[in-house]
Every structure is written in structure tokens, then in C-alpha cells.
Image 1 (cartoon, rainbow, N blue to C red):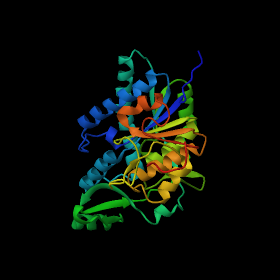
Image 2 (cartoon, one colour):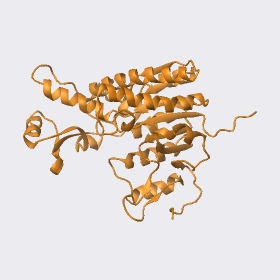
Image 3 (spheres, rainbow, N blue to C red):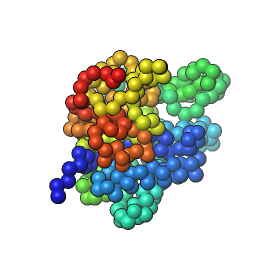
Image 4 (tube, rainbow, N blue to C red):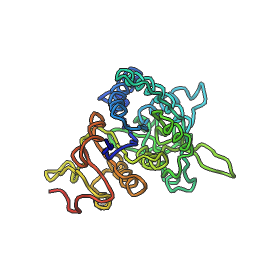
Length: 328
């Protein structure tokens, strides 16, 4: 019988809720427990016959490394953000690989999982480098922030919560290790790569150099999905779907929608830059390229979303939606 599924090769982008406790804490135990839960949902996708690649965030993990940098600065040299991203890619990949292989064995599937520590090319002339805006690490007092500013870092006053370091978040231009990742995926492996948006690198005089930046993992996911030949991108988060007029009495959940309509909603300011905004940009970017379908939904609905009729679970973005009218 002909396989009638609309999704075949799926890229899953895991949010921070998949790697920390519900209260946001990121101890080893909490990270292992959260990734074990996430692995179960991903294993269900594999068990259903989908080819699966995974990318993920790393905010809490990089935040922990930055605190260690600060506390140990007088003893050992602090490491740069590109090193922090590389370290967290490897650590999260190691834990998720173990958890996912165990979850697959539990389902009677013997499948190798491969983690690829991978780089993302950015433009050194990207405006983000002259106007750092991405908050990283923990909140600090004004006095503590002043000490770090004296070392050349950028910090911003967030009011009652305190001061927080801000860094450049340039747009991803290319996934430099994507062909290796595609080879692994084509060979039947479950692939984990481009964690934390990828290790940020620039090209100078024909050589690659790491830079002090973090790349939005959702924007990288949209680009990665194209390189890997994925037809579907699922952004796993902690809400059922995107919402118009969120937090107001007129709030309306978004179901199946065209990328042009979703882009119009974004231009109208419906989605916060630090949370849902990048996810919306990523879904539109993915389906406006070679991809066909992008979904935003809860982590525990991954497999269900891939199986369900379009638009019945989560926010589903395709090139052409059912109509261009806003939900009532």
C-alpha cells in the first residue's frame, strides 16, 4: 500500500523546556530527566517511520558556563561564547543520544543516534555586532555588572530584575557541517546537530574564526532543515500553538495558516521578539524555501502533530493556507 503520510523527514527543534526542570533550573539531574522525557516523544516519531533530525537550544547551559567564567576568572581564563556553544552542544548531545537510544530500544528499535558538533557561518558585518541585544547568563547587581563592563562586555539594566549581559545575535548564513549531517541522516542515523544555533564563526582571509555571539536556534533550524532535505519542521515548545493578541480578551489561537498571512501577523507586532517572534520567522522561512510544512506545538504532541491532519494540532504554516482571513 502506498504511504500517504504528508511528513517523511522531520526536523525537531527542541526549546529550553525540553532541557530543564519546569522551574527553569538546570542541574545535571534536571537536564537528564527533561531530555529523557523529550527523547521518548522523539522516539515515537522514529517508531512511526519518520526520518528524524534534532536541533536544540542551550540557553540555561550557556548561562551556567558564564557564571563559572565569572566565578573562576581570577583562577583560569574565561572561555568565549563560541567555546561555550561548542561545549554545550557536546554535553546536550551526549545526554540526548543516550536517552534516545534507550527510548528506541524500549520500543524494539535498534538505531544509532549521532551527535555532530557543528558550526554556523555568520557575517562579521552583521549589524548585531554593533548593537548587542541578546540577553545571556544571570541577572547581576549594578556593581557586579560594572566590573564585567570594565572587561569589555556589554550589560543592560533590566530594572527591578537587575543587570544582564547582552551579546550579538547575528543571522545564520550557512550550516557549514550540514553535508556531513545529511550523509548521516541518509545512512539511517537519527541526527542531532546545530545545537544552540550552531557555533558562530566568521570567515577572515580564507580561514574560519569563532566569534562572541549566539545565534537564534529557531532561525538556524529553518536553514538546517533546507540543507538536510526535511519536508517538515516541528518547533517543540511549552504552548499548544501561537496566539494572536496574546494576553488580551480578544486572544485567538492560530491553526493552519499561510506563510504570507503569518508574516502579516508578525509585521503587525503580534509576537514578542524574545519568545514567539523567532519561531514565527523560522516557520515562514522554512516553508518559503524547499520545506513544505512547519508546526509550532507542545513537546508532548510531537508524534501526534506529525500524524494528524494539517491544522488539527498546533499552529501549522504552509505556503498556502485555507484562507487569508484572521481567526475569529
